[in-house]
Length: 145
Image (tube, rainbow, N blue to C red):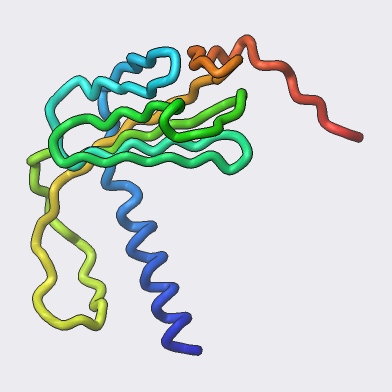
């Protein structure tokens, strides 16, 4: 039990420490009626595009050299509602690794890693078509007393 707890704590420590590595990507949304298309504004590598939405919707696509595109029609059933996307990528800039946690696998720890960048956003689907998300048009939510 102690080793399982230690492994969980170590994994969380790595995950939390790596959360700050990603920097903002200067990207532009170029959605079509059913495709999530993001222009990253510069050349990167190791792209991952993730989309989440209503009723547990989740889609992800990756590519080493090209920005992935997700077409909702090809995924299958999807509902109207608010969707969130995130695009992450790697630059060719090396940054020092400051984490010296021993993962128990032996060997030498890497001295550097590539810097990552990311962007995220929100969009609406209405009538099976992607609409640009405008927070001002969102219906107000009322709290129960």
